[in-house]
Length: 403
Ligand code: HEM
Image 1 (cartoon, rainbow, N blue to C red):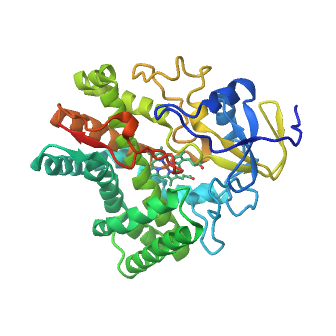
Image 2: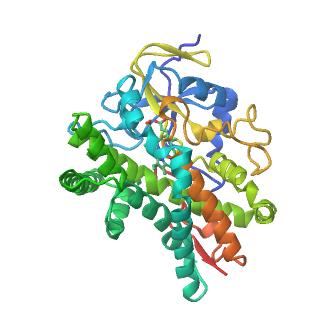
Image 3: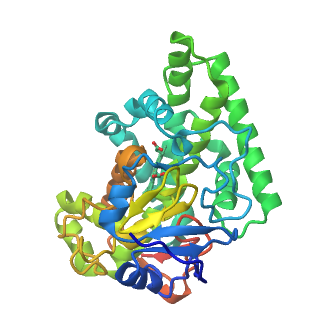
């Protein structure tokens, strides 16, 4: 086992030079030092794990904690540390608390539940495309489709009024932008928290079976386990995670399809292949690459390196999903590869709760968009597109298209 001496280390996050590839340093780290130390913008040091095998092993190891209250938890953004008065949500809990909390909500996200939502998601997508086609050709796809579709879906699922979308989308974008000043970040957090606090209070006064938050209120009541703050924190997590991630995948996925006409032809000719395409696009972009950060609570050996208790670990999905030991020609977008073992949704106990929903939304969007607007094309050069190099979730700020 190697103990690493206290030498100068690379700064993280690193910068992309190509919008379709992870930063070049990921390959070097994976090949030369697959578990290596980096320095974060907070000044903290953390370990970065870059091989798929190691990442999957680590994400099932209970000696790595998700608790963001731990002062050594690796934070990518200064000032992002969890507020002590904000009740832990699923993503920040450890076993056994995490398993209990996840069991209470997992039934809302089963494949069967998602299938039941399919007709409504199709309707939402069709309505947005009707609106695009009603005007003259040309739109910013982010505003016209990518953001509204998952926002409408998560609003209906949770019971959040969609008329408030400008409010919660703007605050989410601020929270996810790495360059938002700490005071603005704090303000955005407080405003979103207050908003959801009031919303949950409303549900508690008049709970219905119609939406997830109402059903959770009723469940808690039936079990004599009212937990207002827990529900607010769950609503916060689901609202933020439920729209911005999928929106970015819709934009990036559409761009990749337009840039790879041979791959687009596969799904246009045979829509039964779209789910494979979605899986490969998730692997290829791995937009939430640092979502799977942890802190070691005991000494642990990772890939032959000793990580000591109290040290931060970033299992870097975007490096792991380009690992040639796991994916042949990993930098090629290839819908035929069967990329199901990727870690774009994480792995282990915290694996994305909304993954079935995200897959379904992406599948419906890509099938419908290219069937209804077969002449869809970019209205800007790729080099001029505003990619979200400034955010903790990768994506596009705008995607000008025409037809
Ligand atoms: C393409 C879209 C999405 C991507 C790439 C994505 C990615 C991820 C990743 C990497 C994790 C693991 C975090 C960890 O290990 O600590 C995660 C967890 C989670 N995601 Fe997603 N996500 C997406 C969509 C969604 C949607 C639509 C929802 C909600 C409806 C959602 C809700 C959650 C929740 C609640 C967790 C925490 C689960 C737990 O800790 O048990 N996600 N997501």
